[in-house]
Structures are given as C-alpha cells and as structure tokens.
Length: 239
Ligand code: FPP
Figure 1 (cartoon, protein in one colour):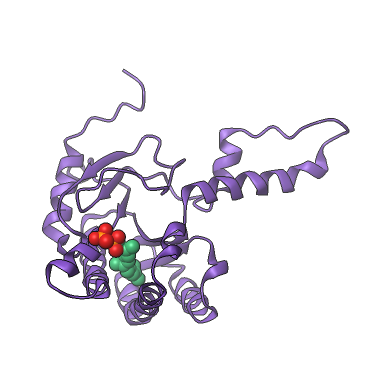
Figure 2: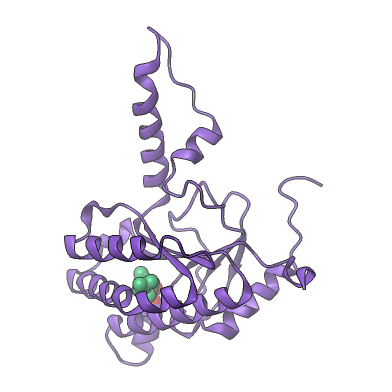
C-alpha cells in the first residue's frame, strides 16, 4: 500500500564504523572486521531493495584513511576489489546500480578498472543505487565543486567581473550532483560526528547514532534505524 511507504527514506547513507574494535574484541587483525563489514553492506543492500529505498550510500574510505598503516590500506583495497567482482552478478539480478564517488587519483588502475566495469554494466538498473564513497571527503568535494565552477565561468567574465556562485551552482558541481541529499544518516559504533563526510549534502539530514559496531549492523539493526526515522517529524527549518 502506498501509505506504508510514506516514511521510507529515499536516500540512506551510512558511516560504517567499528570494524577495528569488533576484530580486536575477538583477538583478530583489523582486516577481519572489515571482511565482516562487507557482509553488513550486503545485508543492508538487501533490506534497502526490499523496502524500496532508492539510494543507499556508504562511507567506505575517507581521504584521512590514507594515513592508516599501508598493510591495512592494501588489505581494504583488495577487499573492495574482490567484493565488487563477487557482487556484480547479484547487483544485476536485483536491479542494483553500483556507483563509486571520490578522488580516484590515488586508487590503483586495477581497482579503477573494476569500478568502471561494474558501474557501466549496472548503469541502467533502477531498483536501488548503491553508492560507495571511496577516497572521499566533504571538504574535498566542496573545493573541487568551487574550482570547477570557477574554471567553467572565469573565461566568460568581462574585465573586473567576478563569477557569482549560487547554492544551486555549487550543488550542481558536487560529485553527488543528481543524487538527492540523504534523508537519513546512520553512524555505528557510538561515535557521534560527521568526520568530513557529505558536509554540504547533509544540511537537513536526520542523524541516527547506534552503539552497534558495523560488522554487527545487519537487517534487524537497519530496520530499527528506519523505524526511528519514520517517527521523526522533518520541518526543514519551517514551523
Ligand atoms: C571503519 O571502521 C571502517 C572502514 C574505514 C572501512 C569500511 C569498509 C568496508 C566495510 C568495505 C566495504 C566494501 C564495499 C565494496 C562496500 P574502523 O576501521 O574505523 O573501526 P574502528 O573505529 O573500530 O577502528
């Protein structure tokens, strides 16, 4: 029934946190937690399709994460490579469009190729967009958007004129252009901050924080977050 779908968010984004602590609690290497974290991405993707959510995005690797130990970075990149190639047939089966957003310049050619292949193959799928933020930061995105706007407009200016950028101009140049702003942002593991994620796009997003560590965040936990969201009243600054 249409009324049942009224409070389903169109775009849910997740800051997946706590993989390292989850692994440590089990006396394992951090990568063990990241591997289990991929299973949580799979579970949440399934539930998102079931619930009719149109966009699910996850913060998989921040610009700041490049400062982690090289073994962890390499392990994570390998894990993503493997996960993308393994999941591609499932994306096709379930009508999931796969996208990656971020600064690709530091990714390996192999990973870039795998990402490009999966994005191309799934580009016409319409059930859900699964968007991975990889090598991404909110400040980077705003800066590249502003620079793009200036580069596109500076040459059109007459002597002494300075390009004036509107909020719409900036949004149109963000790497998320065309994607609706998140309705709901979930962060796991008890941390309550935005950590240089989508700074511009989350201006009116509802936040949901949970103590659950990311590898334990599966369908039940995701449903709890969706239930909490459906009880919120969003006013967007109005009365
Ligand atoms: C945060 O936990 C998690 C990450 C920085 C990596 C998350 C990436 C994945 C789960 C892989 C996703 C892959 C695909 C294809 C979507 P943390 O390491 O910061 O944990 P801690 O705070 O306990 O140390």
